[in-house]
Image (cartoon, rainbow, N blue to C red; front, top):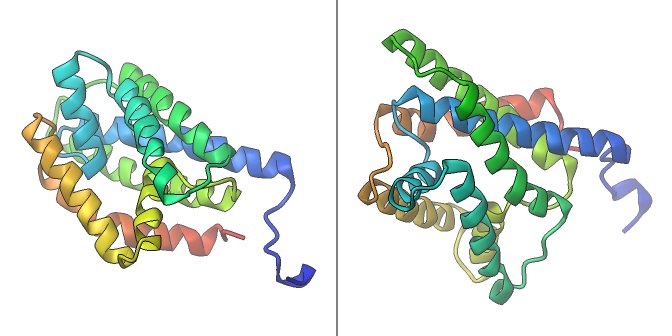
Length: 200
């Protein structure tokens, strides 16, 4: 591979700033969406359901599930990076911090504001985190691992997210209109931010 064909990801301090800034923003987005009470994304429905049954915080469940998902990488021969390990640890910590400081919305308008801010935060966080180029998150790696086993990207993601959403709902996680809005809006929003904050 020629030097000209290698993506320029920027200096190490810049990449670390994108990585940890993205993880902090992702945790904030999770906290905002959970606090909105309008419905969580698939994985956070699962995390919340587990948290309610085990008596642990949502952030703790994010960390524990992330670590367990990484064990599934072994037979798929996926390799973690610094970003992968950091994702496992810090997203949960930042989510718990956000849930600690965010007040419960007392009006429907504030709930919708929380949801809108959550979507923007998670979309921008995704672009920053991927742009750091330091390894996929554990859940993303699971999806790409399934692709390597022969599933299409769309089918792999669909199967994973439907499974965790159903499990989370059965465990008591919050599913609602916010879940649908998340599913419809997060892709286009992420694409929009990717144009403004190039990944390479």
